[in-house]
Amino acid sequence: MADKMIAQFNRGEHDAAIQEAVRRIDEKPTDPKRYATLATMLIGIKAFDQASQLLVKALGLFPNDAELTYDAGLLAHAQENDQLAVRYFLQLTQGPLQADAQYMLALSYQRMGQAQRALAFALTAHEADRTRLDAALLCAELLLGLGVFEQAAALLRPFAQVQDAKVLFTYGMAETGAGRDGSAWLTKAKALDPKGYQEQAGRVRDIAGFLKVQNHD
Image 1 (tube, rainbow, N blue to C red):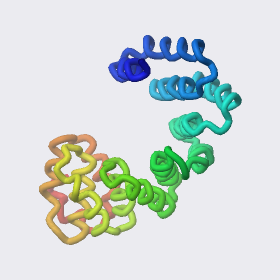
Image 2 (image 1 turned 135 degrees about the horizontal axis):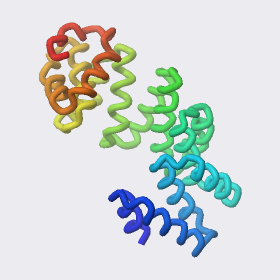
Image 3 (image 1 turned 90 degrees about the horizontal axis):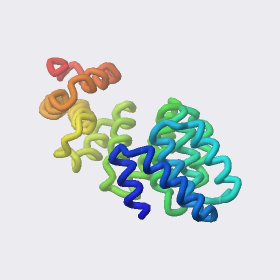
Image 4 (image 1 turned 90 degrees about the vertical axis):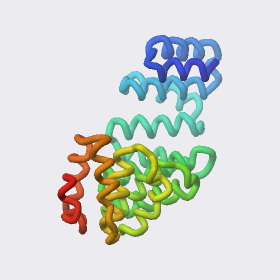
């Protein structure tokens, strides 16, 4: 039943799914997972005030629940309160949500401008699951910013056939920075998402090797 409700939410039927999630909490208010599900939905539609009220109540009832703590971190991150997000996610670096928490810590530290710390957490998340594309991409982006091109390229090479503009752009830049021809990947990235390509290119113009592929800009 929960899967059906989540699928309903993912289809865009937000109101109906949220109403069902509220009903389920009323039906069994002693189940913390039901609060976490509703909180995730509210964060997903940017209903931050309602999500905050729900999480304050839920964490008061279940102060050590990992899913609720994770959702509180997600809410703080969504509101760009990264210092608070870090406090929540650091509580989860052991246990079933540790890989997700490590990834979110990396995102939070990245936005706080602490690239080295962000990279440490991103690499930990990547090591926990080497098939996880988001963690590999974040690692590669951070390495690219630090000028570590060879390692960035190696991380993304297993995903080079994925039709994702950010992946292809980052891989192309890493290959170019490492002294190889990354133009084919950059061309594909631009074709998939011309606007996103321009935005990404604008952020990395200072990376060594960019001028080699400026004709794709």
